[in-house]
Length: 210
Image (cartoon, rainbow, N blue to C red; front, top):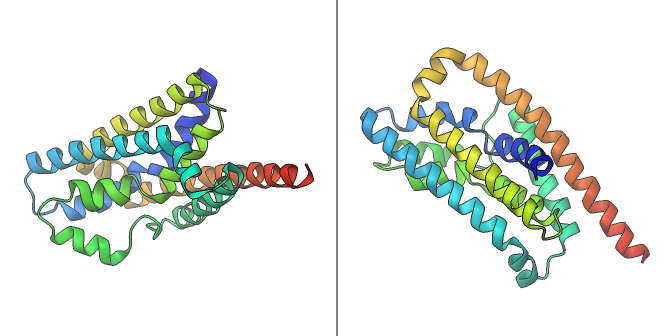
């Protein structure tokens, strides 16, 4: 299970990318009190984490409902992650997570905890696809399920701490530091995305040959 956690945790953490969300969080809570901003950070982290765990646990049922095979979803998820990774490498906010219009709308909202902070900034299409693929990679083993859920919990505890101290994080790292971290995360996420696609294509070819 520790090995599975070691694989799942970086994938989940990098795609959620809480450090990259810090500048957006600061901008959208600029006119809110410190207590209110921290309350929204907590509720967003709880909502995002719960959503990813739900998709991780019930992803297989979603596959069956829509008639989607696991290899096909791995390829699609890998392609989606690659788009996110490319934007991160360029230190840009991935439009697969949120658009500039959605960010601007969030800045005008009184409470951003659920939308757009939890969904789609923290728990967006890329992170949902990631946990579903990671969960399905364990062939239904309990150890893998625990590892993926634990990776989500650890990621969102870290997310809450980073958002709670968002101003300190930005002051320590600066905009340039945050951009550097995003680029490193993006590079690793790109490698994970390629692996998802390779595994999916291999399984599709094996099934076709069989």
